[in-house]
Image (tube, rainbow, N blue to C red; front, side):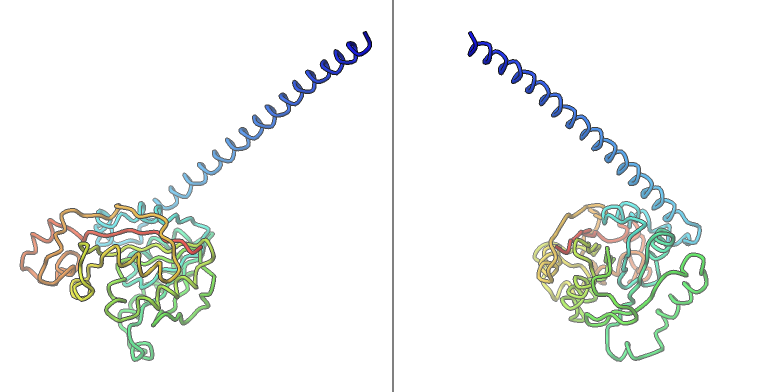
Length: 297
C-alpha cells in the first residue's frame, strides 16, 4: 500500500505543481499583454502628438500664401510623416533653396530637435565666392525671424563634402527634395550620397523626393529633362551603402506626361516657357514624383 500512497501523493503534488505553473504562465502572459498594451497606447499617443505638432508647423503663419498653394502638390505633412520624422530628431536638409521646407522643419524641430541646412554649391568657384545672391536671400530670411529660425545651423555641400559643421554620424534624418537631377548633371550624385550615408547615425534614414522619369529613360535624357528614373536613384543609393526601406506614391501625379519642351521646368512653379501653354501646364500641376525612404544599416 505504501508505494501506492507515495505515488498518489506524488501525483497530487504534480497536479498542484502543474496548476501553479499554469497560473504563473498565465499571470506572466497577462502582465506582458498589459505592458504591451500600455506601451502601444503610449506609442500611439506619442505619434498622435507628433502628428499634431507637424500639422501646426505646416499651418504656421510664417509660411507665405504662395508656399501654401504648393501644399496640394507637395503634401508636406504626409511626406514628412512617411520619412518618420519626429520633433526630437537631428535633421539635415540638403539644398533648401528658398526655404519651402525650412519654413515647416524649423518650427517643428525648434523646441526639442535640431535642424541643419546644407546649401548646395555646384562648383569650386561658387564655393569660394561670397556673392551667391540666392544663399544671401535665404540667410536674410532666417535672420529676419530669429524666434523661428534662430536655432537653424547653416552650412554648405560641395562634391560630397560638408562645410560649416561636422556631419559625421550626427543625424537621424537627411532629407532632399527635388535635387537629385542637379547632382547628376554636375557629376556629384555618388559623392553626395556617400556623404549623406556618412552623416547619418546607424539606423538613420535618407528621405528622397524627386521628379520621376519613365522607366528606360537614358542618363542624358534625365539631365536634359530633370526627370530621373526611380530605378536609377535606388541603384545609386544602394551603391552608397543604403538599403531601400519603403517607397510611397504620396507625391505621384498621373496627369504629368513628362514630354514638354523645357522638361520638368515647363510645369509650375517654374513655367519656363512663359505664357506658352501655361494654362495646360497649370492644369497638370507640379511633376510626378517618387518618394523614397532609405536606411543606413
